[in-house]
Length: 185
Length: 182
Image (cartoon, rainbow over all chains, first blue to last red; front, top):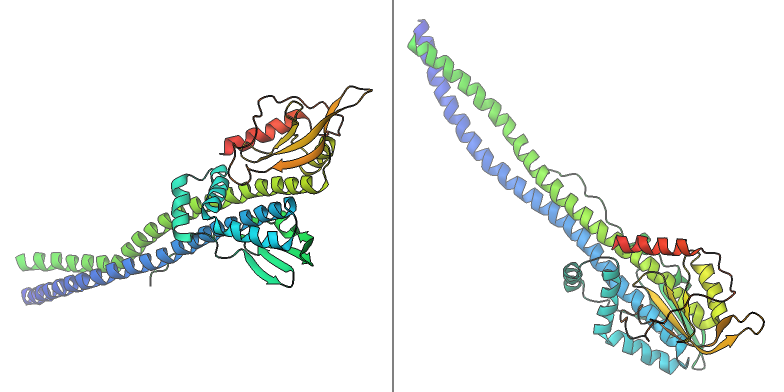
């Protein structure tokens, strides 16, 4: 009698073991896939977010450099609207000089050339220098949230307002977010 | 008897399997979390360093540009420039070369400007020489093309009476710090 009960238990054990084993294998595949997917999704999103900040900063430094160059060209030139337009165009078109100027500032910051190149490859250079050109008032981009205004009257320079550029605080505009906690979903 | 032992042993295996099954998910979660945390932390640290170093570099660059533009608009003599330097950079002082008729202001070894003057003036009472008639400001180091300026080997010590609240030591200290950071 006792022996019979143990035989039933034995059979139940075997069935359970096989069942549990199969279940374990099925879940294993599922968890593995889920883990890989969650990690790659969240990791990609975070790394992308960081890279975007680095690329935006690179382009902002380009605008910043061009803006100073243009202020300098304007103050040292003949101060006519015509020369200003020509200088703005020439500065924007000279991509080698722009790259050199940005790269020089990154090198001064201690950023190695490979790192600079990898940022530059993805970011390229800034798309725009002159933002607005209406009736003698010209707004020039000098970085994220930074504008220099040149005012001309009858073709002659009346005023250069580069206060925003002289007070430009890059640290306020560029900062990485700390990574969020991992979610297994 | 034999059947009894085996069935109990197998029952233990069943319990063990059940426990493993329940812990299985936790294992994957912790492995995934570890990989994620390690990779994101590394990216955060290295990326933040780049952002911060560039921000700092721009901060210095900006001040030197600002000085250069002020010099262009307001400075006539080397004394004017010395006053402006003292105002904008209390701890760093420019150097003057009477022979080259230049005054160089160097915030760091990368960021500097050189002002060119037209003539040397001498105070008849004190014999102190200074430069007058600003002709141009060389900003090539700020444009990323240093080295095109005139030779600066014949640098002379500052000999003018312009206000100079900054002790030499402080200027050197600042330079040293910047240098180390690179």
